Amino acid sequence: MNKEQNNAIHRAAQRLERRPLPQDFEVRVMARIERSQRREELQEQMLFATGCIATVGVLVWAALRYIPALDFGFARDFTDRIGTLFTPDTSFDWRLPSLLKDLHLADYGVLYFFAVVLCSLMLLDTLIRQRIRLKEQAKSEK
Amino acid sequence: MLNNEKELLEEIACGDMAAFSTLMKHYSQGVYTLVVRIIGNECEAEEVTQDIFMKVYKQLRYFSGRSTFSTWLYRIAYNAAISHTRRKRQANITLDERRLASIDEDDVERMEADTSERNLEALAAAIEQLEPQDKALVTLHYYENRPIAECAEIIEQSVGNTKVRLHRIRKKLYILITDYRDEQGAK
Image 1 (tube, each protein chain N blue to C red):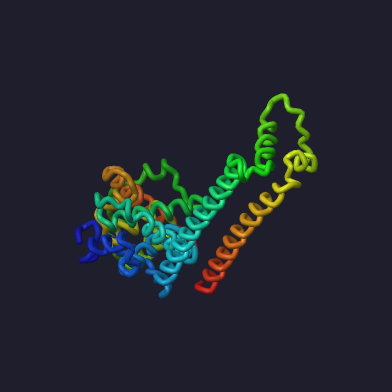
Image 2: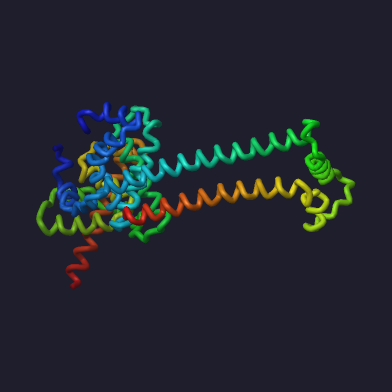
């Protein structure tokens, strides 16, 4: 110990109360790390599932649109209608009821539309359930 | 430093949670002591210490080994605790620069040499009143007995700058204990 570290400031600092950590500190940190890892895994899975749904959706749409045997018309109409949205001189009616009508969602498209909505809701539901479970687990561990 | 620290770090990098638990058991009390000194509140300090070890676990792959693991860990702890106090905007006693400049070196040296019970009690109370950064430096240098070069690495300042800061802290402590004695005398 050098001269400086044996002076009054050093001694006074040594006197300061050493407040102990709670005994289960390490357990709590380990639990937090595990939860964080599970959350990351879950996020990755969700991302993967979303990607799969989007890819399948695009493939189904492409098949319906470009494979003549599967062309029932609505996918082509749907694409054509979307195309008109980006045409500057379009006299498109932006009010929701007529928009849905113009997009021909009332035909086969409506099934396709609701299938995608249902998949998204299922995905969201899984995510929310997982989050609630993790929160409850965190509370009980505290 | 742990004897098998290097091996432990390699095991943690391979995902061994038990190795991380061992490392945490060794360092958690020291880190917590530093954090609680800076923050002042035990509950908040525990939360911040948990965050620090979470961060250490996630960022361990970025630890290059240029400094010791202990220095790297304490640097993360110091930065996290100081950021916390900045968010909380804690009120600290700031001393007048002119008053600091007017302190005589001999008086400070006399204070440092005086190891009487009365002086030690006043100094301990004065340390508690320092600003978070100063309290951290006192904890690292005087409580943990870390050399100035290592303290400098932890607080990310040059050695010269750290020496200047320690010098100013001594002067601040002298002012604070003078005021403390005046208050005690007035009572």
